[in-house]
Structures are given as structure tokens and as C-alpha cells.
Amino acid sequence: MGSQHEHIVMLPFMAQGHIIPFLALAKQIQQRTGFTITIANTPLNVQYLRTTLSTTSNDSSQPSIRLAELPFCGSDHGLPPHTENTESLSLQQFVTFFHASNTLQAPFHSLVSGIIEKEGRPPLCIISDVFFGWATEVAKSLGTANVTFTTGGAYGTAAYMSLWQNLPHRATESDYFAVPGFPDTCRFHITQLHQYLRVADGTDIWSRYFQPMLANSLKSSGWLCNTAEEIEPQGLEIFRNYVKLPVWTIGPLLPPALLNHSPSSGSISGQRAWKVPGVSPEKCLEWLDKHPQSSVLYISFGSQNTISQSQMMELAMGLEDSGKPFIWVIRPPVGFDIKCEFRAEWLPEKFEQRMADRNQGLIVHNWAPQLEILSHKSTGVFLSHCGWNSVMESFCVGVPIIAWPLAAEQCYNSKMLVEDMGVAVELTRGLQGAVVRKEVKRVIELVMDSEGKGEEMKKKAAEIGEKIRDAMREEGSSLKAVDDFVSTMLSKRQGY
Ligand code: UDP
Image (cartoon, rainbow, N blue to C red; front, side):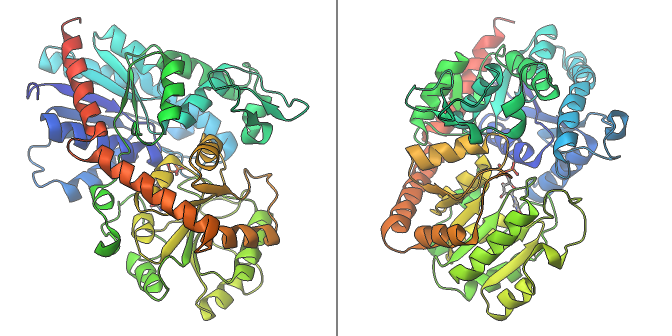
């Protein structure tokens, strides 16, 4: 399709859950069109992208996915030196990082100008992260189109946008409230709002980042959404009504190995090289091999979230009481430096040793080979923070979810999974959410039950997995949407 000489410039936000789907989208478009793609980011993230690309590309002398560095100095903004992504930031640093990311506008403008100078015409379009609303201005000033890419799902993104754009939110008598753009029957609970959204009024530091960012994104030519028509039809209807722009559902952008996985093909291998796992994939797989089919609970709160120390303690006791095997990716609890050494006092006395002796639990520090674990036949349930990538990865291999949403749009993802899809049970939400060992045990038993609720959720997760595979096959809706997006951009070129 199209000309070989087209060029698309991409700008993901500096977080793993954003960069990975952007890279997958770049590969998808490149393979289908032969276009040149440039992905721009800060040097550290470009280094990650380079490593990933060099391990997947056969011909590094003729790269059709190019990488461009944008200078960024965390310490200029009061952030720790070398801060270039969200990995180890506290909540306060997070908002500083968001504001600091606006300084990428000038170097990004120069980058695209340089491309125009060299090639004699503007790139076909700029695909920018929803967190870089200002890219619409860069595109407009340089005579190209801008399309916003949300790496989340439709329902979660719509809720996130509407909640930020319709401030303030205050508790009502019932604690439930209507969200503009959502059906009246679909009310949200005040505890589904993150602590900063509960007090935001348009003048605070969070609103001052989110409101202009979202308003600008709504000025783009359209949206790419990391979901499929079949997965969340209702969420897409809400999202389309909200943004009132073309929406191309080009996802979920999952690794091909996971999309091609079948229960009989064993666990996948070749995990992405973002971080060194706290345990080798082989050790995890060996451990899982020793457990019966669908018997293991996998617990992870994603790449940047963690829980409180008291929640960690109750979760540990509930796990022990349940007697169910588990792999738990533990990060330092809230209040501790994310890079600090693991401390035994975060868990009940001799917990790790006891779990190892009984072969009940494998504790992994900081980072685990998630795709390998999820695709292993012994993994039965995922206790997840409901980050969109984790949710899609889990369903792709038919694993239902115990939800514990913590930040961003995770509470809205969880709401959809529980209320619309019946594929998750929520254990608690947020850092203030009550967690008691008895409840942990009850929910684990409910979802890991091989009959009743657990079985029903497993069936639904597998059905969503089928829909994901259908959407992502050659003639599927998501790849058609990629082609449609490219055709629309090519026809738009006439109008520049
Ligand atoms: N991930 C992983 N190992 C970990 C934690 C996370 O491989 O120990 C990967 C996971 O497979 C997913 C991504 O990191 O692809 C996390 O993205 P998600 O959207 O679920 O959550 P976020 O980290 O953005 O909150």
C-alpha cells in the first residue's frame, strides 16, 4: 500500500506501558506499508528501543524504523539526575515529570523541521501520545497532520478524559456520581477517583497539566486506540461520542508470540529487554512446571505502581491462608525508594522462607518475565493493577483477573472488566483500600475455584482471547483499521 517514500514520526510518552505499544505500532505500519518510521524519545528510552530493535531486526544497515533523541534533563526540573521515564518516581515527582515533559516541544519541533528540510516535504503525519497534546500545534505549524494514540483501552481513556475535563468531583450523599459522556446507569464511585482527582478543581498542579493536554489532543485529526472493535463495543461507542473524531482501533498491540500462543504450545520465550528480571525466566518456568494446570496465582502491579506496607502484610497473610501457589512480583512498598534493598520486615516473619519450603510461593523482586509466566499452563489467575497491557496480555492467554487498580485509568478498566465483561473480581482499590487477610483468602478461593464463578470467568477470558486473535489476524478488524488509517492519511496529504 502507498509509496515507499512516506515518513511517519512517532512520539510516545516516556513510560514503558507507552513505549512498548508505540514500537509495536511502528513495526505494524512499517511491515504493511514499507514507510520509514522515526520514533523520537529521550536518550535513555532510545537506548532501550535500540536494544529491542537490534534483537528483532535482520538488517540494521537499512533501518526503516529510525530512532531520534530528544534532549531532556530531569535535574533541570528538580527531578533526580538521569530521570527520563516514570519508572521510579514518587507521586509528587510524577506530576513534576509530566510538566517537565512539555519542554520536549521545542526539540521535537526542530526534529520534524530537520526531516522536512532533508526530505523536501512534511512527514505524512505525526502520531503522538495522548500525553503530548502540544504535538497538534507542532504538526499544524509544520504543515502535517497529527493523530493521537492512546495506549489504553477505549472505556478507560474516555473515563479518564471526561473526569479531567469535567472538574470538580465531590462526594455526593451516595458517593456515586454521573460522568459526562457515560450512560446515566453507569455511575462511578468516589473511591474510583485517584486522590489527586478527588481534590482537583482546575487550578491545581495536576489539572494544569491534564486539562490543556487533553484539550489539545482533541484538536488532532483522529485517534488510534489500542483496542479492538470486538473487545469493548460499548466503550468504543462512548469514546467515539466523546472525542467526536475518527477513531481507528488498531490493537491490542501484543507481541506476536503471545498472539500465536495456544495452550498446547507451552510458555512463550523471548521477553522484552526493558529491565533485567529479578528472577530468570527459566527459574520461573521450572517452578511453574512443578504445579498443576491453572493452579498458580500470578501477582504484579505493573511497571510503576506498588501498594502500602500494611496492604502488603495482609496480602501475604491471605495468600498463606489460602494455601494456593503463587508468584508475587514484590516492589518496595509506598514510602520507600523504589531502588532500595528488599526488607524482610515488609512481609510476615520468615514468610519468604516458609513459602519456599512448602513450595507454595515464589517471590520475585521488582520485575518478572510476565509474558512467560502468563502463558505457562500452570498460571490460572492474575492479581493485577489492571494496566491495559497487563489486562490484554492476560486475556490473550485466557487468564481471568483479580483486580486491584491503583492509579491512572486502572479503576475504570477494572469497572469495565467487572461490570460489563464479568471477567474480573475486584479485591480492593487504591492505596487507601481496605485489605484484610480473610477477604484476600475468600476472593482468591472464589476466582481460583475450578467450578462456579472461577470457571465462568475463565471461559469469558478465553472468549476475549479469541476476539483479540480474530481482530489481529490478517483480515481482522484491527489490521484493517491500520490500513484504513494509512489510506486516510495518504488522502489527507492532498489537503496540506
Ligand atoms: N511487565 C513485565 N514484568 C513486570 C511488570 C510488568 O514484563 O514485572 C510488563 C507487562 O508485561 C506489561 C507492562 O510491563 O506489558 C506493564 O504495562 P501495563 O499497561 O500493564 O501497566 P503500567 O506498568 O503501564 O502501569
